Length: 633
Image 1 (cartoon, rainbow, N blue to C red):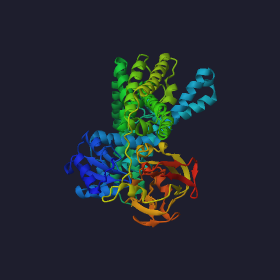
Image 2 (image 1 turned 180 degrees about the vertical axis):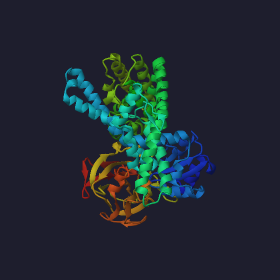
Image 3 (image 1 turned 90 degrees about the vertical axis):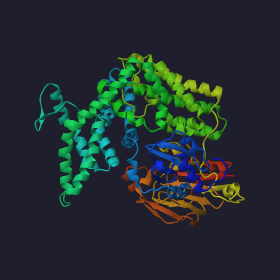
């Protein structure tokens, strides 16, 4: 963000003009930091225009939304934007607008994101078993192996039940009914029936022949089941008397949806997933160089746009059909390339802060999570991201000559899952992945040492408040004569590094320096004397300014804007004067978690760049009487 001071209305007008005017806006909402706009059509140039505006941190497009990251002043900008556009569409309706592709991507993300770490953990366990079997021929015959093996396969075997839980929340239908229906799909009895059909027996339901399709490890059949169930349940709830509704709605849903899935939904969707998998496999088998170049070079760009969840059904179909998948092998090389780019920045950077963020991002990347690396380092400086994509492309092309495969599903492909490429029947597979990964990690390091990593493009919220008629230095320092200010923790809990927060806007450091706290209680207290400068309408976030000018954002939970203020009770108002230790807000931590959301709370110094240094205390747990930050002017 530049140094020019801008007013909220001017910024709102500039944003509206950049995104195509009022006629291109379907609706808009806001959270604690972002103005979320749903557009009829997207202009590729809009992100760059909006991202460079004074008062804007960055602009991203995600899940069909054009998101303008502003920071604590988003409320004022939203109010002005709303006055310029006729916004009378509810948030839920907005989310159902946009292209089919955006809606599919949003659904895949909502369904798989909550349990992807379970699949990743199971995949790592399978990799560990592969390594042990390499050094012990007898281990595979032991009871220990058998127990660990069925533990590692359990999340995949019962994947439809995981999908039932998350999809029911996304489609807003009864979770227990969804689980009951999807549990029937993975019933051992159905597996026995399908096996008999496969052997030539004829089994019918109401005179209609059943197919041999089984649904363990399946994705699309349970997903479509829950989607259609959401409509059926709402239909029945409106028409069945409330006295018998609790019994007859589940009964009718199960006896209608399970046979419908077994007869129609399951075979059709399975055929679709297998068709897409076979299409990719045809490319990988007949033009492996092309497949490797596309995935190795462009996969991390796909991650930026949030469409990476869309390949999950195809990958799982590959493992189900063939017991192997080349997509995740090339995907791993792309991930390793971004880690290499981050390492290149670490070796080249002179700034301690840049190196600190980069080291954290590199460690996270080891587990296959590249969002902190992308948003916090490589895309932030642009050049490392490009070098990473080029290196991933070259590494995957070289690997393609070895026909690399994964033989165990990796929820988060990355360095720790490379062992999933080991298989005695395909001995060259692991060598291809290792050679490709070596190129992917070394090449960006070399390129960055030669050409540098570019200039920091991060813009910081709160650096220059959007208020006319005041000098910037006066706003930033508030005429304080103190050189340092100590800020205590606002509540008790477990401290989490900002880079590990599963929200790229916070984890990248674009909002400012800080950390996150997983609260152990339900009360938020004032960390200093000052003023409440922002309270979101949904009460999930609060902005504070100390008497010396330090601006802090406390964002209770992640994506808690969707709870519409239900678990939050405010004890202060916008503009209120506060004293250190005052009770500001109470929240229901258990309710937040019951809704499938995380209570992890980012605590950010949003005007970090106004100070010489923000010292973050090294601690595992925070207490109200404990120092959290020291701000040095």
